[in-house]
Amino acid sequence: MNGRADLRLWPVSLIKGLSGRAVDGPRRAGGVIPNSAARELILCPTSLIASSERPCNTYPACSRIYIDSTNAFPTVVCSEVMLILGYGGFEVTRNSLTIGGLVAFYGYIFRLFAPVSIAIDLQSRLQRIGASIRRIIELADSTPSVTVTTNRLPAKLDAMSDLEFKSVRFSYEDCRPVLRDMSFRIATGETVAIVGMNGSGKSTIGLLATRLYEPESGSIWLGGRDIREISPRSLRSIITLVPQDPILFDETIRGNLLYGNPEATNQDLDTVAALTQLNEVLQRVPGGFDQPLGPFGNQLSGGEKKRLALARALLQEPSLLILDEITSALDEPAAASILQGLDWFRKTRTLIIISHRPATILWADRILVVGEGAAVDTGKHNELIRRCPLYRRIWQSQDNVYSRIAHIDRVRSGRVGNSQ
Image 1 (cartoon, one colour):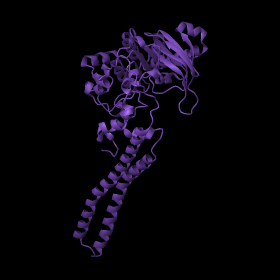
Image 2: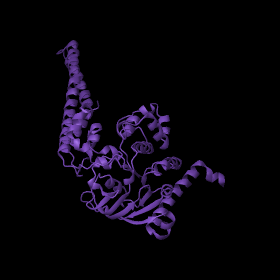
Image 3: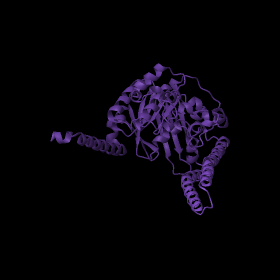
């Protein structure tokens, strides 16, 4: 134990019971859990308290007490030892104390150090646990931001995977609007790349499509039905989102994959590992599928986390898959291999890719250009490069970036010098 109020000591059923409303829907959302914090609570409650929109005021104080007490204790111990030995030695020279008495007194004092240290540590832990419990109660008593309906849809909804935004407006809390008048339609079986400048609202599209947030106005339709008429659990059995920063749990690789589909077989795991180049990671780590990843998957690099999150999403076999910058942390060969592995998926399902990478953009059937919270234009690359100034600017900027990267790689490998 390191002094953290780790709720793995608590029964998971208790935490699920406290936050049952939040756990209901995130499994099919590809690991994006802003509205289902119970999953994160089970694994790392302190991070939730630190990052909450309503932070517990007790927590920083508890952390400060714990840090100050643990850092100061060795200094206090050394000072007391020096004081005891110095003053005791002085008394021995004055014949006011025998050497045996000094040794006995020092031994008794030394035996008190361990209980005092445990008491200080216990007090800090109890304060942190109390703050965590209060935060869980606040979460359990909070009102869900997404209205849950009782409508249920059939298990197989491949024909309903077309997606349409109609004049959608959305902003985070009281900030400026991220989406102002977003309207577009993506047909069933289509692969669409969404491109735009930073802050244009690309990632927000995926969050709204999976009902992790509700639009302020306008509507989102799936297969001719308003998604507000569909329960979040049913909706997330159709749409899976792989976010830009995927969430991994303090589990093994197998456990993180089975979170997407608990009934998946070993053959299913091998298949998605091959499609997403995850088998390279499995060959590197000693435990293979049973390799622990640590909190938030910190044993993996950014690119490896994205491969694992993509494999988990493919195991769910969604009708519509949304990938947010899935190739951003990968080199060119790895990104090309992943796109090749996704070829089989997009033959029968709808695929939305949010990306800046030129190769990924060209791989899509159609490109949707987003700017200032609205859909600016849509079409193929050759069409947009001629008629859409925003797309031309995005393409040129990204093309220049990758050209500079390629030049730096050639310089480092000595190819420029050799060619000259």
